[in-house]
Image (cartoon, rainbow, N blue to C red):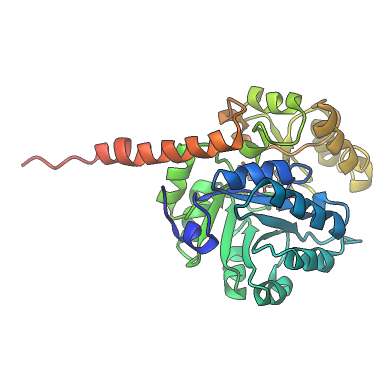
Length: 327
Ligand SMILES: Cc1cc2nc3c(=O)[nH]c(=O)nc-3n(C[C@H](O)[C@H](O)[C@H](O)COP(=O)(O)O)c2cc1C
């Protein structure tokens, strides 16, 4: 067992989080992660309405009696989803852990805290981590440039980002982006984090509700097989490299506008990738960590393997490196 400030504050056995994942963070995966003793997070906005989220929370409870949480991604939008209603459903369903991401969590904190909900805020820079800490969140999850999804615009990889954040953050902190195994967990702990958050690695497990072809595509992919789309729009997203994502990069690099790629990046197209298993059908999210993902274990096997590897690394390899200085 690895006991850290994160496991103690958030009440889970292992310092491992399955981050929010659009279309992927559903009951089956979240319950499997929770049963393994890690923190699984349902993705609120994968459910079309707050009522559907309430049903998905109930479905997860049928599959596990362990704690799990909900990711609420609060990206600014022209017509935003009804965030307050999702928040209300989370509270009324008795969920005690929420991962916020995408924007300032402060407006949501009074209601969550009044209901005894702990908030883990995911961000991509030290300044946003400090701001969230100052606003009273209970934990920070910090995504390095390696990560799947939105890495921000600063391009600071985890090796520096996590260490720099650790110098400023006094509440539990989870390192995110590029983690897949025990080596990563030990490295994160060494850099000053209290645990790891993983997206792509959990997406490539037996219980992940996406087509087998896509899991096999992740196993086959190398660390170089991602694209950064929307860079010129300063809304960068790291996604799997395919003909669609490469075309989006090319159009925007030539000076194209969002309107010119709107159809290519449509969420509905990305969703069909996961449902029908054609990796070329649209944009889908994956990180550089693909290069060190070589199999499709169950979530339980994965969590156990990561913890075992980490403990062995600490007790055997690292402890063995330290030798007495001879006289
Ligand atoms: C398919 C997929 C969908 C994602 N969707 C979301 C999301 O809706 N909200 C969010 O906060 N993060 C989202 N993420 C990011 C993950 O929660 C996590 O921060 C990221 O995957 C960490 O990088 P890694 O993939 O290298 O582990 C997504 C990641 C993946 C792979």
